[in-house]
Length: 385
Image (tube, rainbow, N blue to C red; front, top):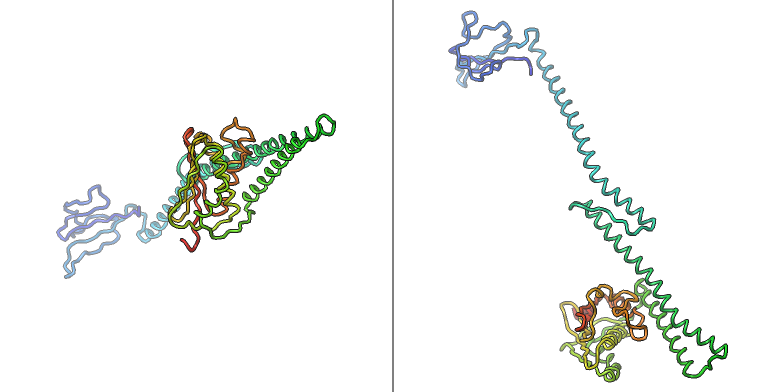
């Protein structure tokens, strides 16, 4: 690269290295120059002896030009130019490769992000069914999957909102139509306002008031506006006191009401009115869907840092397909039941919100035709933890 040839010749005249030859070790007798042991070469510009540490001469290094018109003094500049040229070429090649690679990498990253952006714009326009193609296991694919999950949740919530509007209108329309028809009949003189007919109107009015109250309570619970007046209480004593008022109904339906309480006190921090509403709702539902000679069992226990309350029955049970929706508003597992026997379908939704407001959870397991079990978990109080 520098246009220089190096040769090493021993003191005996043997040429051992020649950079201008295809052989690195020559081992041949060098052609003498002017009676010396060195090689004959008019292009030789300088030579340098090789001596040992004891100053014993062993060989000579000859430096010669490959091109006679090139001076060795210019080799330093030639080396710098060659090095700079190599660096510039390498930098240009690296820059081109970097641009090419960055283009393909950026396209791979930007393409799914553009797809997510397009899907978000479609959702903004009201198309909640739009999804993105998410493939691979990198962060961009995770973003696509997260977006699809969000879209599914929004689509489900939108469906619930529409169903809620339709269900509320349906629930209100029936009693209002009954009241309206009877009042019009009274006004037209078709029917007399007897105590029995007035009692029917009163019952429809009470049902309307109860439905509106339940909807208001559910809205407050879902919006985090529910006010709890929590006090320490023993679940064992509280459950026994609450279900005592239900015993006549169980006796009338010929359904056994069984209890199994934990040996030690089950202290929790709860709102008595809200928890009483939960227990009555679950126990009444169990009675409603349990046949004659069946049983409903209420039990309490301790499970790690939780106090558990279980309401089980051997009634009709819930179909497996209906279990994921059992806590949704206006959902009825048995579509054939009327509002008089099946309720408005928001009792379990309110129950779930009330338990979660206490920092607890409620779950359900069921086998169709064999029975259902609701399990409530409430955190221990600080004094009991």
